[in-house]
Image (cartoon, rainbow, N blue to C red; front, side, top):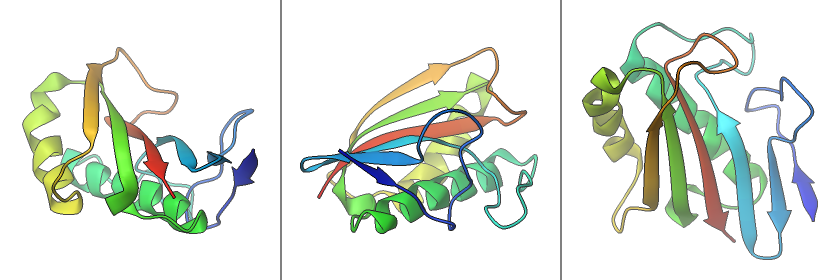
Length: 124
């Protein structure tokens, strides 16, 4: 296994890696809407949060010589399912057909005060 690290995505806030490579699979830890340069949450707007979250996922994938097109599975964690349609709208702008398999789960809270977190599994 090989750890993935990039300064183009937020640093881990706990004892975990931004991502790991295991054979031909890439596992990206949950990413949120944090600006990797400042460490600040980009916005309270769920669309802006979703865009930054996906851009952070993309940065980790790029550090592993992969891309959004190589994602096979995503898990989307949301703190309010009322935001689901808005998240889907932005998600569809970044993902291409055939779309990855996906789960979406409403959670009571996330480790920081954000509305969305996304983790992915991709191939190399």
